[in-house]
Image (tube, rainbow, N blue to C red; front, side, top):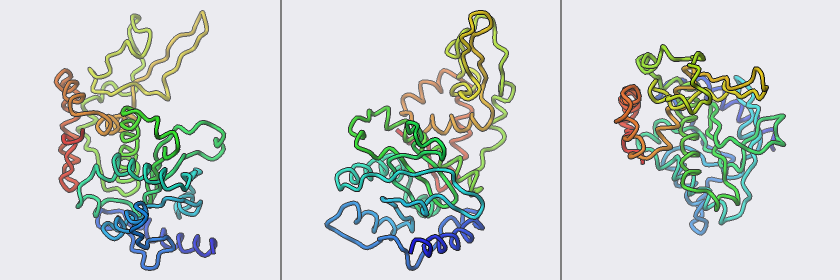
Length: 299
């Protein structure tokens, strides 16, 4: 049965990967192998049923490998750990998914741009790194967005934790799914031109000892490049190597910032830093083209 299901998925994804414009985001599945039946006595199942009926997007609460591993262009080198299938946990997990992702967007946007499926996950792990502590809360591929963190420790999440997850999930959705995969969302060159002279910068003054000594906002950045910034504790030649972000890191950090901050937090920075304000306004106008989605309303 699983082999048949995987074969059907591959056939669907062949057609799905051919879709690259905003008119073809969704794939219709007449006879789904997922449980899309209504069950009014089960709030999670009832929501899954109604959500599919309204938006043609399937919420997968108990993912299996064929739901996320393969597509025709490449293999997703990840392992998605399903949440424990307990009613209370799934209810709380679905509430989080609604809060940080689904309810962020208006009705028309969901109908037009949401993926074929939204995968609820305990953890997202990269193959070969399964023994490490999960650190990713989202992954986007050609037909799904996976959202992790649905586990018993959810009760310990602070408001800051939830905001950070919201930032990561929606940044991956816009940058990885809508932009890189579907070619629907395009960041204009003028956004990058604001900080053009600072991209990849490594030449800082002698008075700079740590990344926190640099005012990244003054250059229009959210932060530094974490992958290329490091500390060497050699007593003679060691110290910090600090690098400004490149364009791809810059836009990801900006999207995370937009979705993880309050209106007050954003306004405080935008009033102080002209380059930050300029880049924010460019993104505001650009993202508003997508069914009127207004980032200034995010709180």
